[in-house]
Every structure is written in C-alpha cells, then in structure tokens.
Length: 111
Image (tube, rainbow, N blue to C red; front, side, top):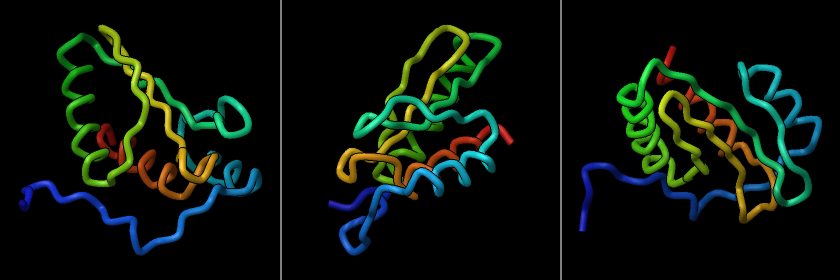
C-alpha cells in the first residue's frame, strides 16, 4: 500500500546519541529549545504559544505532518493557547541528530 505522505526510511541509517558537547552546540543554534531530564530520559523541549485553540491545533496538525514524514514522533502537551514539544530518540537512549532535525523543521513552521 502506498501513501501520499511517505515516511523517512531510517533502516539504512545508523543513529546514535549525541554527546553532551554536541547537544549543547546544537541547542545554541535552536531558539527557545531547552535540555530537560537526564540519562535515557533526556530530551529537548520547547513550548510554542498561540492566540487561541484554533491556532494551537493548526500548529499541532502541521507538526503531525512533519513527524509522520520524519517517522519520528515527539511527545506533545496540548493546551488552549500553547503546545509543549519534547523530542528524544528512545532507541539510542538520548538525543540524536534526528531530534535536532525535527526541532529545526518544527521551528520552520512558524518562521
């Protein structure tokens, strides 16, 4: 079965947890993203704020399209006027380049 929204194929790529130095360097280039948690629960997080529920849900739906295309799905906390996004890569037990790439794509939604 084909789909009009193909997922990124990670099967041919090796992913790894970024070092603390690499994470800090990437965070310096990502506006508003912060490091949260520790160990295997470490993640990058950002809260996006909106004027109303409609704008929040429009953002969440656009983010869902990106997540599907990347085959990488963030944890979301959705409220009337905001959405908190949390990214990490469970299979590497930390933050990977995939998380950084997704954060950049999510930021681009509102650029």
